[in-house]
Length: 348
Image (cartoon, rainbow, N blue to C red; front, top):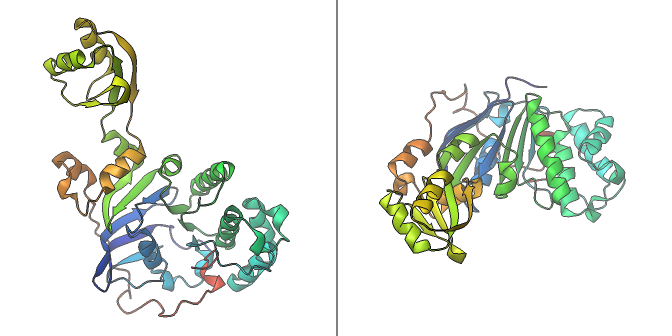
C-alpha cells in the first residue's frame, strides 16, 4: 500500500524534556529513490527525531510527515513504513518464522510473506531457530525482516549495522541502495561514518539537536579543500619556500611530513625543486566524511564558530510547506504498546 510519494518531511521540529532541549527547529526532507544518512554523536537528538517521526514522541513544536500525513494518520502504517529502532525485544523461545507470522497477521499480509523476508535478509536457514539464541547481527536482520513484512514504501532505521560483521555490512549497504533504486525512501541513522559514506547520497548532520549540515554528500565533500601531504628532506626550508609563494596553510605531521592545504601536488613539487629540497614522498588527501563530521560536531551548538563560507554552506534550508490538514487537532496516542501493525522490528 504505497500511498503518496514516500516523501518524508521534517519541518521546524522541536522537542524539550523539562529543561533539556533535545531537538531544536530541525527541518529536512527525504526524497524517494534516495538513501539519506542521519548522523550525529550520542545525545545529538537522532533517536528523539525518529521517535517523533514515528508518532512515539509528541513534538513541542513543528511537525513530521510521511506521504504528507503524520504517522498516526497513515491507517495501516506497517504497509507504508517499515521501522527499526531496536533489535532486542524478541520472544526468546519463538522461532524467527513464527515471530514474523505474528506480525504478518497484525498488518494483514499472508503467512508466506514471513519466508519471503527471511530469504531477503539471509535468515532462511535460521527460520526454525528461537530468537533467544540469535547473535546481535542476526537480531538486526530479523528486525529488518519484520520491518519489510508490509512491503513498505519507506524504511526508517536506527543504527542498523550494529552487530553486523563486514560481510553483513556489505550486504546491508547493497540492500539499502537497491531498495532506494526501486523508488522507495530510506532514512538511516548511524555513527559508523565510514560505512554511511559508502551508502548514502545525502546527509543530515546533527549536533546537540540542531542541523549543522543538510544536503548532498558530494556537495559537503566539495566544500572542503583537499591537502597535499609531503615528506621533505628539510621541512623548515620547504615551509619557508611555501610561505614565500603565499601558501601558508601548512600543518606539521608526524615523521617530518607537512600537510599543505589549498595547493596542488604540482605546485608543491615545483616550489620544492626551486628551493632545492628533496622530496621523499607526496600524496593528495581528500576530505572524508569522518573528518568533516568531527569538524561540524566537535562541541558546537550553533554555526557561530564556523567561518562565513562554512556558515553559507551549512545553513539549514527553509521550507514553505504548510502543516498537514488536521495536524493541530490530531495527537499521537499517549500509550505506545508494542503493536505489530505499526511496522516496528523488534520493539522500541
